[in-house]
Amino acid sequence: MTIHVLSDQLASQIAAGEVVERPSSVVKELVENAIDAGATAITIDVRGGGRELVQVADNGAGIAADEIETAFLRHATSKLTSADDLWAIRTLGFRGEALASIAAVSRLTVVSRAREATAGIRLVLDGGAVLARETIGAPAGTVIAVENLFYNVPARLKFLKSITTEKRLIDEFVTRYALAYPAIRFRLSHDGRVTFQTAGSGQTADVLLAAYGPDTARQLIELRPPEPAADPSTASGPAAVAVRGYVSDPALTYSARNHIQLFVNGRAIRDTRLTFAVVQAYHTLLPVGRFPLALLFIDMPPDEVDVNVHPTKIEVRFRDDGAVFGAVQRAVRAAILETAPARGLGGWPAMGQSAAGWGGFGAAADGRDLPHTQLDIPWQLRGPAPDDEGLDEAAPAAPTLPGAAETRLPLMRVIGQVGAAYIVAEGPEGLYLIDQHAAHERILYEQLLAQRRGQQVASQRLMAAATVYLSPSQAHLVEENLPLLASLGFEIEPFGPNAFRLRAVPAILGRADPAQALAAVVIDLENETAPLKSETEALVIKRVCKTAAVKAGQTLARPEMEALIAQLEACDVPHTCPHGRPTLIHLSATLLARQFGRT
Ligand code: ADP
Ligand code: MG
Image 1 (cartoon, protein in one colour):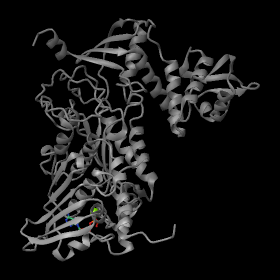
Image 2 (cartoon, rainbow, N blue to C red; image 1 turned 120 degrees about the vertical axis):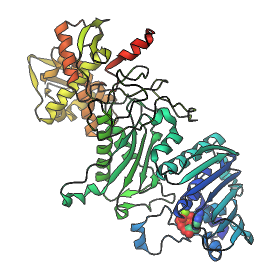
Image 3 (cartoon, protein in one colour; image 1 turned 180 degrees about the vertical axis):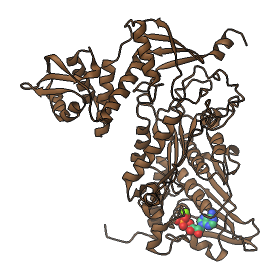
Image 4 (cartoon, rainbow, N blue to C red; image 1 turned 135 degrees about the horizontal axis):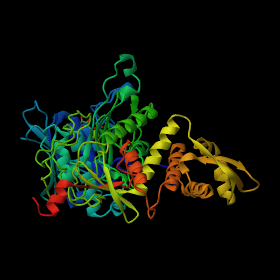
C-alpha cells in the first residue's frame, strides 16, 4: 500500500467517531449548544432511540445566515479565540467539533434565525456535504434535525446497543441537564410521546420531582454551602470550591453508582475519584454493595479545572484534586449526618405530627433550626413511578417518612428481651425494637473511633499470651499491617515462621477470644481489595467491633440492656450499625393505633 492522505470525508468520519459515539452523544452536543446559545426552552424529539431522528429545537441566539456554513466546518467555534481562553471557559462547547462531526455521519437539517435577523435560513447536509440552502421564515432560535445517524459508517451502527438502552442514555442526559439548568424549560419526547418535561421554574426541587418522582425526591437531602469563612484570608484556598446539590437519605440505595451525578461549573462530568468520595462519605451508613443517589454541583474558578482533556469533554482534570475530593466528601458527610432520620416502619408519620403538618427538617421538633433541609413534599403525593429500569430501592415500597428530625434517640425505658436477640423498649413516640448485636456494634465502633481520635486506644494485656498460626500470605498481611494493628491496641510479636504471639488486644474486645478476633481480622484483610489505607483501617475497626459485640442468642440481664440502650442513645449515628444495617425499628404510637383500628 502506498502512503496517501485520507480524503476529507474519511478524515472527518474518523474524527466524528471521537465525538459522536452513539445517538445520546448527538443529544448531548446539541443540547449543550442550545444552552450555550442562552436558550430558555429546549425541545428534544427522538425517534427509534435516536437512530431515525434526533431533533433539538431551542429559542436561543440563533446562527447568523452568513455564518451557518462555517458552523459546520471542523474547529469552527464562536466560543474561543486564543489559547488563554481555554482557562476561562464558561461555555459547555469550545472545540468547534460537534456540528461538523454530527453532520459527517448523518443527514442533517438546520433551521436557524438569529434574534436580530428578519428571516431565517435552512441548510441541508448529507454526510457533511451541503445539499440545499434557502432563506425562510422561522422563529428566533435554532432547530437541528439529525436523521439516519451512522448511515455511512455501518461498522458504527453494528456497535449500537438496543433501542431501549439508547433511549435510557438519552433520558439520563436530558435529565442531568434539566437538573443542572432548572431555569430552562426542557421537553423530551420519544416517538411522539412526551416522556419528560420541566417547567423552567428555576427551582431544582421542581426538576427533582419531575425526574425522580415524589417518593424518591422526598428522600433527598439538600446540601447547603458552608458559612463563609469569618477570616476572609482563608476563603481563597480550597474554600474556592463550592459544593451544592442533593444526596439521598441512607435509606434510599441503588445497586450501582450511576445515580451519583457530578457537575463542574454546570458541565456534566464523570470522575471515579469524586464518585468514590461520595460513597465514602456514607461510610458505614450503607449496606455493602449499595450506592446512594447524589447530584453534586461543584463550582470553582474556571482556571482551577482543565476541561480540555477529552473530545467529549466528559472528563476533566483539577489543578488541586485533593481539595475538590475533600470538599465533596465534607459537604456530603455533613448533610447526611445531620439529617439521618429514625427508621420508621412502613412510613407512618411519627406521633404528634399530622401528615399534612409535616414541614420537613427545617421544622425540627425542638424548634432548632437545622442547617440542612429535606425537600418539602407532602407525603400523600404519589405520582406514577418513574420509568427507571435501574431503580432498585432497598427502601420499602410505602413512603418512608422521616421521623422526628432528631439524629439522636429519645430516652427509652427497657421492657424486656425477645428471642434473646432484640431488646423491647418504650419511648415517648411509641415502641422500639433494638437489635442487640447491631446496636452494640455501633456503640463499640463509636467508642473505638473516639479513642482513636484521642490517639490512645485502650489496650488490654492478656494474662497468658496467645499464639496464632497463619498461612504464609496471612502472616505477610499481618506483618504489613503491624503498625495499624498496634495503633488499635493489638500487641503482636513474630513467633517463628508464620506464627505470632498476641500479648495485648483492644480493651473493647472484653472477653472475646483474642486469637479468634485476630484471625477474623486477618480473613477480612485477605478479602480486602481496596488499596486505601483509610479503608483497611475502617475494615479492621469494624471487624474488631463485630467480634466484640454481644451476639444474638445471648440472654441479657436488665442492667445490661439498660446500659446498652443508654450507650446507644449517646451515639452520634445510633440508627445504623457500622455495616449500614438498622439498629432499631420504631413502631410509632400512631402506627399502633391505626393497626388496632383505634383511629
Ligand atoms: P462548539 O460548541 O464547540 O463551539 P459546535 O460544533 O458544537 O462547536 O458549534 C459550532 C458553533 O455553531 C458554535 O460555536 C455556535 O456559534 C454555533 N451554534 C451551534 N449550535 C447553536 C445553537 N443551537 N444556537 C446558536 N448557535 C449555535
Ligand atoms: Mg458544541
